[in-house]
Amino acid sequence: MFAFKPSNFGVVKRAFSSSAAANAAKVAVLGAAGGIGQPLSLLLKHNKLISHLSLYDIVNTPGVAADISHINTASKVTGYVPDNDGLKLTLSDSDIIVIPAGVPRKPGMTRDDLFYTNAGIVKELAEAAAQYAPKAIMAVISNPVNSTVPIVSEVYKKHNIYDPRRIIGITTLDVVRASRFVSELKGTDPSNEKITVVGGHSGVTIIPLLSQSGHSFTDEELKTLTHRIQFGGDEVVKAKAGTGSATLSMAYAASCFVDSLLRALVKGEKGIIEPSYVKSNLFSSDNIDYFASNVELGTEGVAKVHPLGKLSAYEKELLSAALPELKKNIAKGADFVVSGK
Ligand code: NAI
Image 1 (tube, rainbow, N blue to C red):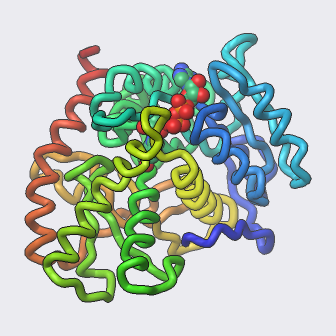
Image 2: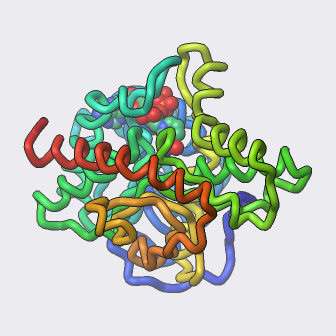
């Protein structure tokens, strides 16, 4: 999953939501001129399953698009700002929309501190997506992901186009980090580690299932590793000292996720699993409607939400701490659209 090797063979025909070529997809990146958006767009330019890379930002997109468009891979690249129907032209006929638009954290901030700025941005972009690309699969990076995914869902419900399979929060960076941190401890090749991370995408809602990793850990190792995976983003925020949060590792993680989605969507590959934050019935008895777990991707986005499997006593404790926080984050996102609060 983590080696970025976009495939270039054996494409299958698929009934695309757009009129785009049936063996490659149009992918829109909203927030494409930002810290994540630029390297993500660069990595996506390498993906042979993309026919059209459609970039949008409120500033600087024409420059980013012109620069990336000189790379000698086949996909077409366009770049728009809001003027002259930019958002409409960016989104129309898209098969996948990725949103890294919004402000990142500064030292001392939690992801929830970003809520009011980013909630408005994600809502505005979801409104446009509902209008111009209602069949596209929406992949959300903007934080707080625990809340921004419910925001997109509520916007889509208002537009009567809601299909929970098509809205996905990207939590791949948690998996990338967990795999790297475990490999550092165990002296293994990180690209062979596959650590499942479930729950949500902030602090205590991030639950690494280290008991399913095939390794054994002392209690001390478990606590230290779990804390590092939950708060790994803080290491980057602190090191960047006020200039932003993870951008390069996030761009890598998102490009891996989009490649998996494209393989399912364009090539019809089966059995592609990425832990992701989606509408889920796993904890609906606790009134929690969204949860990250292993998700099988398919031609419509989410094909199957997998259960968590066997949890250790420690992981059950982590889950108990995560659920109330997640519930609050979800309600905050949904309320923002439903009651405008
Ligand atoms: P950044 O500030 O470098 O870039 C954000 C971009 O969004 C800017 O270019 C800005 O012009 C653009 N933007 C703002 N309003 C917009 C609008 N209405 N429409 C289109 N574009 C708009 O921020 P960075 O570092 O790229 O982070 C972006 C988001 O990703 C943040 O919310 C951050 O917290 C989140 N993030 C998520 C991660 C995850 O694992 N899901 C990991 C790291 C960051």
